[in-house]
Amino acid sequence: MSDSIRSVKRALCLIRLMNSKPIWAFGELAMASGLAKASLFRLLETLEEEGCVRSPPEARGLYQLCSSVRDLASGVTSGSLLADFAAPAIIAGTRRLRWPLSLAVLDDCYMRVVFCGMPYSRLASKTTTVSRRYWLFNSALGRAYFPFCHPVERQILIERAVAVLAEHGSSWPYTPQKLSTEMREIVRTGFSVRWAGANDPTSAIAVPVGRGDELVGSLVCSTYAKSLTQRRIDELVPEIRAVAEEVLAIWRQCNPNSGAAAAVPLPARRSATVQTRAASFKADARLGPRS
Image (cartoon, rainbow, N blue to C red):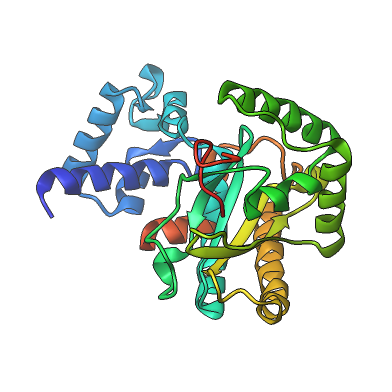
């Protein structure tokens, strides 16, 4: 490891350490960090120059983090936090089922994959689908999300989907009765299935992660096109649901004071699960793929 990389690692570790309490004496930091005092002083001096640490003029020798440290997390979204929290459960579920599991969240009138179990499955048809978006009304992911969200959200999503289709020169393919009938069946069974089309290499089953105000996303299991039979659906659905329930339970635990779909707190409140992981590790072709 080069000296520059080692310095970055030390600075990040120091910020993480200082985040554990409001103010530190220099001696306390030296003892807790295990750094030589000369190295610690240089790190603090650099962090102070960058506006991440301050030492009050009236209390030299005492150090505290500045609010600008929060800027380091400004790119963190609720989806990326959910991926961090859910990763261990999805990896374990993928290894147990052999078929890959992937987690997606709402993104406009699409579902965007935030964590993919494909790298952990020998049966995966791709290396990953992270950041890939799937149209809400023809993908297993989207059809497992839409019927279970709040009625007001459903209406907004329909209006947005109609607008997006119009932008692409397409019209809304559903009558209210047709959409209602299809969604009622998904609510009745608790899952959605996307059977492989003529040119699709995979089929997929998806379940919601939560419902109503607690709906945070959907979880999909991908299989080979002809591998998805009714018998396999009967076998897989309870297992996929169990993983979805585990993901939701983890999300609730990490956000005890808010609804599962509410605004996510700052990453400083991440659980030990996230820290452990960090340490170890469209309706047609124009609108996007289906999963």
